[in-house]
Length: 330
Image (tube, helix red, strand yellow):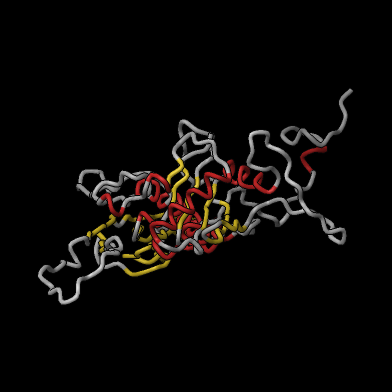
């Protein structure tokens, strides 16, 4: 014989009268952090192509000057200057809520203000993924190709088009795809950056998940062929042992280790998935905003409230040699 149940809510029976238990908790299952964007200096832009100049110092001269020697030759101190630039890219996210949805009670809630706020959060992730990308810049052609900015990966790969060799990221500051990453490699990258900029105290390593796990093992194992377990002093008054690495103290400065947004870090080929990272100095890159992030409401034509959020900006890498790039670990 049939019996009353809770699972059949489409046919006659007790299930059709069961109340819904829907809590007021709304969970978004997506990472939202934007460390590269958040750490960048912000400036205003006034054109769709933003440019900046770079210069360098000549090598030290240790030769002496003879007594009574006149100055017969003169140096053009600005001969080594170069001009770099990046295209301004426009970003946009739209949103809308029907008039009926605006009127009813909902979890979250799901009103126009919440739709607008979610679009802004999505827009920030779009920007983070773009500036952390490996793509080259593109020029608007009026036939479907829009202005696109050059991503950090393309600036730091040691072969950035239009960047004189003097200002490109040196090979010593790049851990090429498939490099067996170790503490020795990390120290070499930091040292290479120091040799270019003379400072490494402000470095920040934005690491994807696989790279971060390898760096965390620096606290557990020694860099030797036998991979011996490293001794850790334990405070008996403490309830836990910290084996993660948030600050790495190298020979040439302290590096902050932060998690890159896994949805925004560049995809890699030929190496361990999620094994990329950027070793950046926030003093030497910034965001130039032509149109600051804002929201525009559009007319309600009868279906409900709608609008969009947008901005236009570009990434300025003021000296590619002041940064390092871990393309992918093996």
